[in-house]
Amino acid sequence: MLKKIALEEAVGTELAHDITEISENGFKGPAFKKGHRVCDEDVCKLQKLGKNNLYLIDLADDEIHENEAAALLAESLAGAGVVFENTPSEGRINLHAAFDGLFTVNTAALAAFNMTDEVMCATRHTNTLVKKGDLVGGTRAIPLVMKRAPVERAGQVAAQSGGILSVRPLQQMNAGLIITGSEVYNGLIKDRFAPVLKEKIEALGSLVKEIIFVPDDADRIRDALTTHIAAGCDLILISGGMSVDPDDVTRKGIQMAGARDMHYSAAVLPGAMFMSACIGSVPVLGIPACALHHRATVLDLVLPRILAGQKVGKKELALMGHGGLCLNCTECGFPDCSFGLGC
Amino acid sequence: MDPFEVLLEQSAAVHGHLCAGQVVGVRMAMLGCRLIGLEDPTNREQIKKLIVFVEMDRCTADAVAYVTGVKLGRRSLKFMDYGIMAATFVNLETGKSFRVLSTEESRDLADSYAPEIEGKGARQVEAYKRMPECVLFRVQKVKVHLSEFDLPGPTRKKTECHRCGQVIRDNREAIIDGRPVCRPCTEQSYFSHAKEVTWSGMNRTPEPIGREKEDIPC
Image (cartoon, rainbow over all chains, first blue to last red; front, side, top):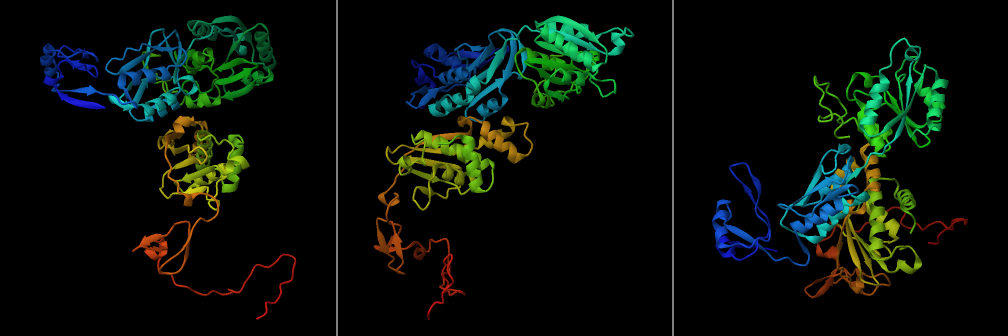
């Protein structure tokens, strides 16, 4: 329960919450911390901050203070790879990445959490690459004192599926590349795919184990896939032949190699003719030609998620539509742009 | 108690269709029964220990009644016409009572929980299956005031209406000027202008199966 008392009568009492100062020099933060015992010298400064009354708190058994509530919420929100310090400032607790990896948000659960009264949590976009220590979210309880039961219920909402916010480390995978195209295989033109794919894979901490060049021949494509899997590749990227021309037999070759969960098309531009599949437990990604011409494509959205152990199939590729539009800026600023956010 | 999907299929068949209200009702009943410690309510041992108050006459009410086995005629199902998506589950043996309320926000969250499902109805059905209980429901511990006249079992009291002579069961009479009066006579009834009539074929009785209809002697 909160009791309002006049400032002059508050001398000797403890502050019930942090008191925020926004100064002319741009500082915004707590001028006084919760628990500070008000003394005569404080009165003038508090008056300057617009405080003529203060709250005294007398918590009932079924009530909870905002700081304790924030700690409870942060504890529930933080899934694997997300940490926080229980030092609320102005009732807020920040959550950080415990290590480098892919930050993910259970967005449905986050919406459910924020639909519960008197609590909030704001986060970065889901499926964002983060570094150890990066700020990934912030939470707070809104009122100074709340009923305990609704906060605990909000905590349960936050804790679903092991915590709404999590960071997963990227696995180091051994990728096999297959570069298809008779024109490249026969030396009519020089391959440009392999260096692009290699750079993207290595930038995320994985390795390219082997590169196989094949003509537009479904049997040869199937054999190349089998070779990579036998060699221990746990990820296969296959480029070329993903279009609709009669010579484009890549998908047929993948099918012949025993692929399952094949899905062709992604709601991403550039990258609509992307294909995902699995052979056994090995993800197979069919990369359309746009990866040659655009700095950021569907591959840049999918690859981190695969390395973080996610399945990326029909549903995931469909949900990428929201935010999946590259604006083709004169100077590409990816990943610091809207491309891929919201998926 | 059978698994959720089995209960849902059976409940939808009895109700007439599968809908979001059925999903909510089946889950509401499963939660309510769990909270009061009667997890197999249709079992002979437990069936007499349970009373359920439903606060809406919607699809959800049918699902709650189906899963719990409570029935109006057995006095284990009480209909409270509140227009609220809630039901209260009472364990008569222990007195434990919990009121389970369907959250309003769960309706808004259906798009988030099943974004890939096309069509509002189908999306709600799938989303309500996926939501954890803490998103789908709020729960209140309550005290339910039951008199002996609310309990299952034989009629405990009969009274005659002082105005029309109608027999009133189970203490449902109003007392006006110290005398018992039936609800229709209090003018707080759901009908008005009651006038007794005759109807064609009013001599009819059900025809026995396998027997020629006998002429009824005049």
